[in-house]
Image 1 (cartoon, one colour):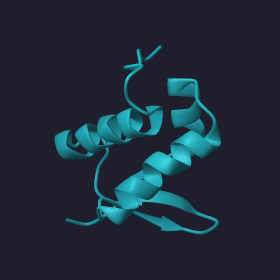
Image 2 (tube, one colour):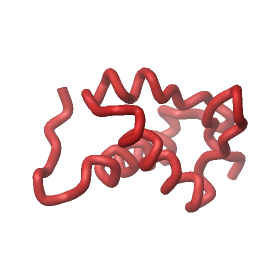
Image 3 (cartoon, one colour):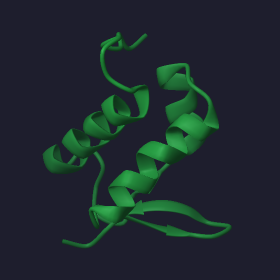
Image 4 (spheres, helix red, strand yellow):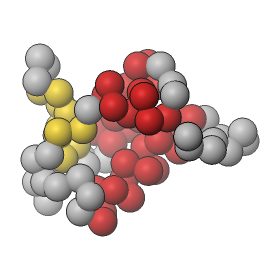
Length: 75
């Protein structure tokens, strides 16, 4: 299980991990980012995962399509 830094919000730390995975190519362009898998991996609620994805969406790293999910944005 992921070890969170207790001095920083969990959603920020999750966003950082996703950001690194996008940069490394682990999450390919147009690849689905599963909220359910992230919830399970990090042991957090959907609300926490959605805060992280909202931050990444604001940065332009991901796009979200209602009813389909969040995907890595074209660079």
